[in-house]
Amino acid sequence: MQTDTPSAKGGDIVYRHRSATRAWHWINAFAVIVMLMSGLMIFNAHPMLYWGRYGANQDYAWFAITSGHVRFLNLTLPTFGLLGGHTPSGFLIAFPPLVTIPDHYDLASAREWHFAVAWLLVVPGLFYLAWGFARRHFQRDLAPTAEELRPSHLLHDVKQHATLNFPTGEAARKYNILQKLAYIGVLFVALPLVVLTGLTMSPNINAAWPWLLELFGGRQSARSVHFICAMALALFILVHVTMVVLAGPINEIRSMITGRYCLPKEKGK
Image 1 (cartoon, one colour):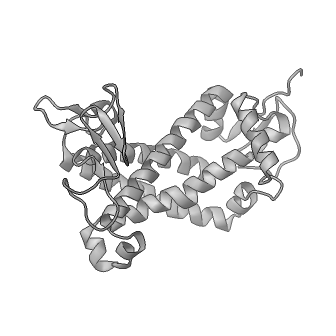
Image 2 (image 1 turned 90 degrees about the horizontal axis):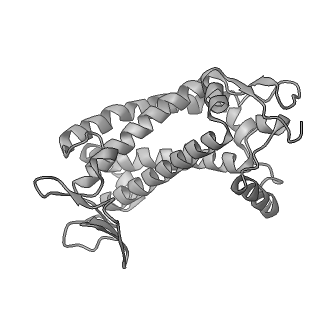
Image 3 (image 1 turned 135 degrees about the vertical axis):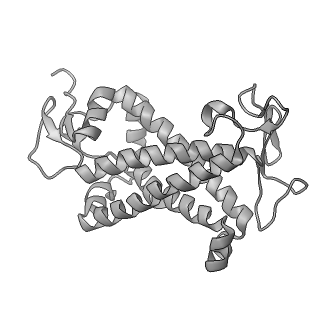
């Protein structure tokens, strides 16, 4: 986010996002969405999650999607037809074709999509991280201040978002604390864990880097962490898109395409 220009007021057009940020945003958005959808198809092959080194049908699964139900630990909830359906041949699929790639049960094709697009996630991501640290983008724009981390400040920001009171004028040029924490969580926690746990599930990588298995406590634990992080990314995307729509989609999307952003006017002006 560009913040090193003179102070501005509501209604002014400012340069908000650098070209590297905009390019990575759209590449990453495409890669994550395709990987989420192909990953859901891969999950359909065995819709159960385990902790530890081993896991199979007869073992205890801490999470499972069965026919019309979701089980989390010892809690079973109905899915009302949204999850846990069946193919025409009667095969159980956890997630419906609407949200999977491909849109029919095909594990081999889903894995090909998943692994091919993974390069779009990893390679540009590494370049973006290097650029972000070298240009001090992360240190300057994402690092929270002590004041922002105060519980009272956090609670205030939560209330402002809950009541749709978004920043205006000069304040809209910078990330607020909720944005900072969300982006830090995605960039430095969820995405790295998704990549590392994905590698841990590969037998070839296990042979080359056995320390990954030790780090995550086994392939099944890595698969569980992989799924949890993927769902966290899906939730982030959902919230992010909702906030964009509520804050003004044309202005927000334009800023991520051209870099130019019209600062929202202060109320009463």
